[in-house]
Amino acid sequence: MFEGKIIKFYREKLKFTQEQLGKDICSVTHISKIECNRTTYNKEIISLLSERLGIYMENEMTKLISIKNRLSQWHEAIIMQLNNEIEQINLELESDELIKISDYTHLYELLKVRYLLNYNHTREAEKMIKKIQKKEYELSDFESNLLKHVQGIYYLSNQDFNMAIQTLKQIQIEDYHNPEYYYHLAIAYHTINSPVLAYYYAEKSHKFFKEINNYLRVIDAEMIMIIQITEDGNHEEIIIRFKNLIKSCELCNAPDRKAKVLHNLAYEYYRRKNYVLAIGYYRESMALKNHESATYLLSFESYIRCAFDGNLMPTDVLIKLAEDGLVVAIRLNELLYIHLFRLTIYLLKSKCKEYHQYLAKKALPMYVKYGYSFLIKRSEKELFNYYSKINLPDKALEIAKLLITK
Image (cartoon, rainbow, N blue to C red; front, side, top):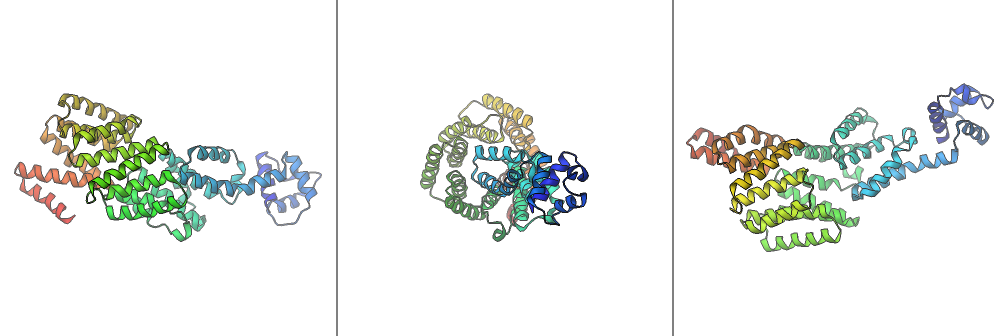
């Protein structure tokens, strides 16, 4: 069954005609039928053809048959976030030319997209997604759901959270059997400030990660769950859960996850106006992050706001820090943080009018476009208070209607 595919692949690779390959072995017609799997053939002919092609058929058959297993192992490694194994299998598969003639070409391409998204290569991932979409009718049920999953992850990476939810919700778990996507749904719902659904899906993913003994992903899901209950939960209990997560990160040697937990613990103290403890945890979080990254900018902007609200540092120092943050945000082309740092600079310089004009005309429309519910809510409250203060009742009423509707 596979011998014909393999012979055709290597014949075309070596640019042999069927006549050249079959000379003194068998007819062109017989070669054609072997390649199309439309005839029976004896081992001697296959052996002679393989020898002419310079291959060992048994080795090639083993490689072709093992592709499915390697793809399954790759998918599992991606879910488990085992980076060394992910990279090793990727290199193996990239050098395996037989993928092109296997029955798993589409599966390989879809997992390649996940691989690219894992390393934030979103442009390459987008190109591959568009290519796969053109032949979506060829996909199996599993592959069709995997496509929706990678599209959802792609939308998350592009901060299009509403599209991520819309896409991920189309997945049929009975055909896909990969509850990991619940975690990505939880992330999306958390970002659009939908705590009940964020907790629900985080809890489902938490159960799955525990079942497969993936403790790093358990930490991820647990953190999402804790964040959802910070508004109404017991403060002391929440602090204990955050600190237990930090210990788990240390036991698992996961500094990147520890940085995220520290940031969220800092915010828990910040929102309760304990600025001294908050700024300390923001500083710890920043120390574990790459200074040229969006995650660093997130903590850096929060650190500056915390210092300002708590009157912990001179204003001129904070302005310099905010300007440095803006430079990095522009260099990384991170639009969200460009807006946040520009607003922070206006705030620190007491440019009230410029602050609210920028908020209304540039920042808020971007927040709305991408579904940043927390920032939308905060911005609308700020604008309502500002318009009321400067006696613009029509504008204040317009914002009030939005707040009431929500």
